[in-house]
Image 1 (cartoon, chains in turn blue, cyan):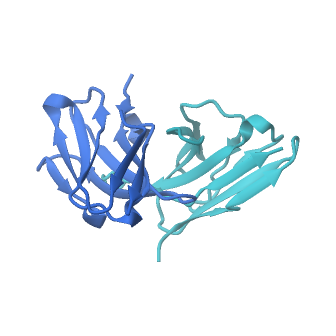
Image 2 (cartoon, each protein chain N blue to C red):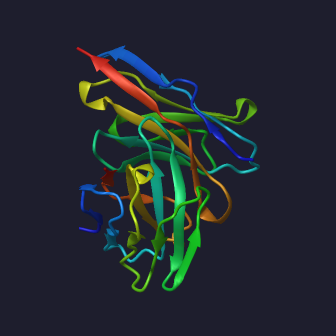
Image 3 (tube, each protein chain N blue to C red):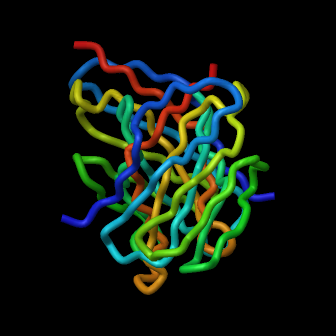
Length: 112
Length: 114
């Protein structure tokens, strides 16, 4: 069965530090991959997506992600974290019939 | 501005009550979805619709039901609420014509059944 794994449940970084959130997806010839962010009490907002082409994709709020087929990974990065980035981050993959399968999420805390 | 709305945002209700969670979108999207999210857990698809009069059950078994009588409206109903239904419910929509598979999410309804 297809699955999405986010190994890190909780990450804490200092403001201004770099960030990398890990995501591994299961087998898929052409994976359609997404990163969403969820602020407390809110719905999910799309940060970026990958379908094909350039393996480094740029998103909103200064985030980027790199698709690595050899590692089945789609890690999210940001060079300098802001306090407002504190939130829950979900990696997701499209499976059949346009359904999304989500990872368990990574909670990001940012210290001043 | 196109958007997706959910009401109520928070609901505390007693066991045995019938409840309906509302979801509406103004984007003209044909596909709509309901997800259930427990704290610290991933989202699980409980219902989806590919268009008017189309509804299907998702991966996670749910005692709730849905209807899609109008394109913009996708309400979820629980005939008899139980404490096990306490969770956050998120509605989403997407446009199959775009081919991007991007889903747009509402703010969610946090349901507590006492």
